[in-house]
Length: 114
Image (tube, rainbow, N blue to C red; front, side):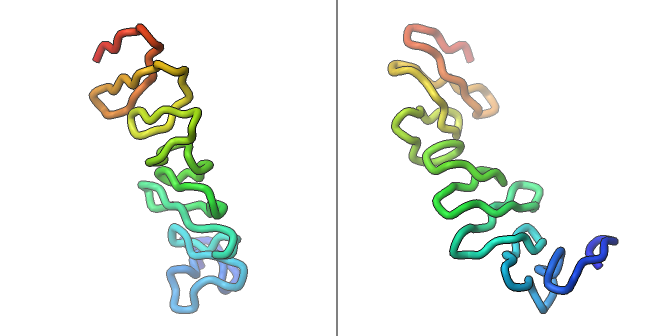
């Protein structure tokens, strides 16, 4: 029984039990999700829930994104780091960060009003 829902042994919330997850399942965010560690990894968000990302992807606050995009520390060549994200922009674009830390890109010659 998982939070009032019936689940087969080794599935659902079995990740929280001594038995753990069954074959072909990965413990992620307190649940047993389909996947194999050779092909994916657990990505949990601020709420503690999770999803399985493909090897080579990155986890950004509970969302799977392609490497070099999203919240990557090293942005892909055609993206510009701004406000903790990798954003598409034109050469000469500048990052304009707001009080919350999020950002937007300003075009060359535009002014950032923060």
